[in-house]
Length: 122
Image (cartoon, rainbow, N blue to C red; front, side, top):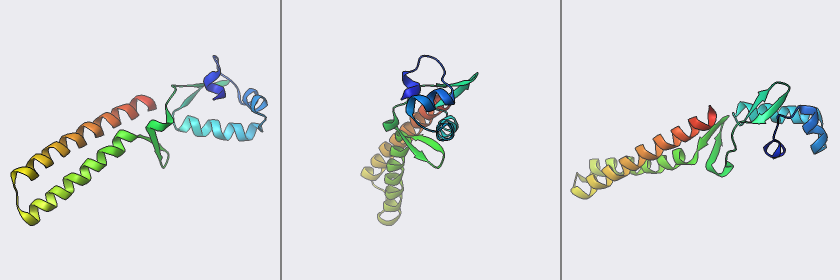
C-alpha cells in the first residue's frame, strides 16, 4: 500500500524506514511482488505496475490466476458430468442443450480469465 500511495519509485531503504521494517524483509517482499508482476524496478526504486484488485485473483503456486478462469472449471465439470450421463443414459435434447450451454460458458470464462491475467502480467 505504501508503494500504491507513492507517486514516484521508492527504494528499499525508504520503504523500510517508512514501515519500520528491516531492509532485508522489505527486499524479500519486493522481490516476491516483482515475481508476481505486480511491481517493477525503475532505476533505484520500485513502482506499482498496475493496481490489481486482489479479490479478482487466486494465487496458484507462483502464478496469479483470475477467478474467471477458476469459475470456468465449474462449467467444465458440468460438461464432463453431462458427457458421462450421455454415455450411461443415452443422448437426449435436454443433455445436448445443457452440454452446449455449459461448454459455451466454459470457453467464454476461460478465455476471458486468461486475457485478464495476461493483461496484468505484462
